[in-house]
Image (cartoon, rainbow, N blue to C red; front, side, top):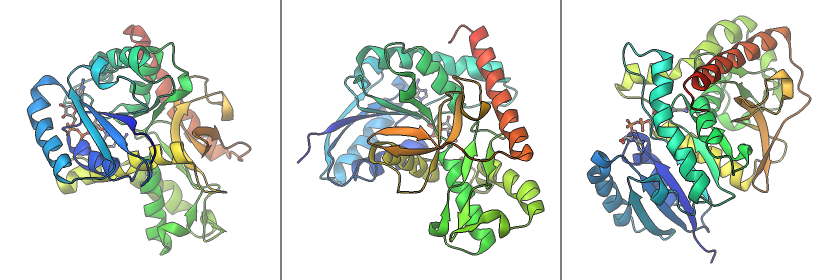
Amino acid sequence: TKPPVRVAVTGAAGQIGYSLLFRIASGDMLGKDQPVILQLLEITPALKALNGVVMELRDCAFPLLADIVTSDDPMVAFKDIDYALLVGAMPRKAGMERGDLLGANGGIFKPQGEALNAVASRDVKVLVVGNPANTNALIAQQNAPDLNPGQFTAMVRLDHNRAISQLAEQTGKPVSSIQNLTIWGNHSSTQYPDLSAATVDGQPALDLVERDWYENTYISTVAKRGAAIIEARGLSSAASAASAAIDHMRDWALGTAEGQWVSMGIPSDGSYGIPEGLIYGFPVTCKNGQYEIVQGLEVSDFSRGKMDATAQELTEERDEVRKLGLV
Ligand code: NAX
């Protein structure tokens, strides 16, 4: 059997954590032959609730769950970790400006970046889920100068999965028939769910749906799905967010299927004219634990406008956290 790997989850006593931890421990993320040690970070007042979650994890008697560590100190929780899922964050409260939100999250992601830099495995793979995810990932990355910037990623996979499911519903086809759509940019309302290269059963998706539906209904339905879940459930997406985090890490670690791509928020290398360094949603393939941007896709004028608008928003967020001295 393989030696266990160490997986850190922050915000582990929260709603996403309650779904995510059990999926990781059962082998959904890294495979049914890979034992894991969970290293769970919470703020001090949530440690009691976290202990209850740990009791339940133990009660599942998962054969792959080798050990559990809990702490309110990132230097302890991130010690020697191979994977980090940064879920805990400061949500936007009524009346909060973007600067306030970014500042509050800087207070979380700056010290976490520093702790990753100090004690994590040199090969650690980091996924930021906590919002604003792309810019939180940038803050953590910029405070971890000894790690490769490419080790820091942000989650747009929930948007990607929502985009698949909405297209499946509209075309009456199973989700498994859909390939190669892309979420470009920020995990926010400016994201661009792009069907230009997507196929349904091998046929171009844009031949199967009305252009008007695509431009005026589909894109906003995907981008506003989070709000629709809150309206219906009274709580934000949790199990679906956890499932997307599992998908993101699994594909990164174990690889994407031949001929298919997924969407990940990763540091731009300038591809497709996106300013270098922004953590931006791109189409990627993964192999041997490395991701690579899919190159050579055609970009229409419509796409260009959408891709630039979401890049512009991320540039403004970066300027804001620069002003705050967080990056
Ligand atoms: P919850 O409020 O249920 O849980 C968050 C947990 O984080 C709490 O238990 C809190 O004590 C903990 N926490 C706060 N500060 C911390 C710190 N400094 N260190 C460690 N833990 C800390 O939120 P939940 O519904 O689980 O959502 C978590 C985050 O995911 C939110 O920021 C949310 O906006 C974000 N989401 C991101 C999505 C994405 O697609 N990227 C989708 C789902 C979700 O909305």
